[in-house]
Length: 110
Length: 120
Image (cartoon, rainbow over all chains, first blue to last red; front, side, top):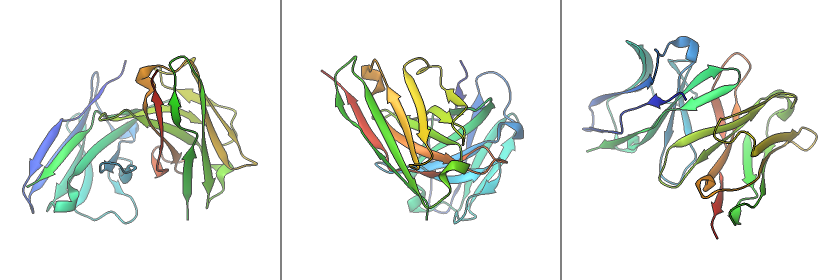
């Protein structure tokens, strides 16, 4: 069974930078997994932030960026703001119509 | 404007069945692959199932294969998820989501979700 792992939590100061990662239990994440990232606040539906590794979805501020770091996908928030405090999920496309969500990272801004 | 509205959730006894619906508007429904994603209380998101634009191909997570059936009615712009043999661990908010255009593999629009509670 494929497991996609993320850090459980991160804390970042307002204006600071934080990088979240998304890794595979076995193997490396590459652009061919089409990693995407979603932001979710409690009680709300997810919001699409990044797709195809590093493309920002419409309306997403440029303080959010995506990349591949080593063997993982990464989401970086540069200049964190209070309303960035959310849960963040990555998704990897495994082929044959199958997707796997990461375990999620809770980001606190304080 | 794209809208996805789920319905059909509720309280169901273990072993029971439920059919969830997702009404789509604001786009050409028949041109898009659609998906269901769920989230158990206090837990993370889990991809559950997907269906091709024409409905001829379906995809399932191993955790639901054999119990869940995804379908769609393109004449009604509606996506469905039939859930049988419900278990306590199926308790979750169920979201429908649209996969974006053919060249990319991500979900660009989401509904607000419908809550399924499995309990006696």
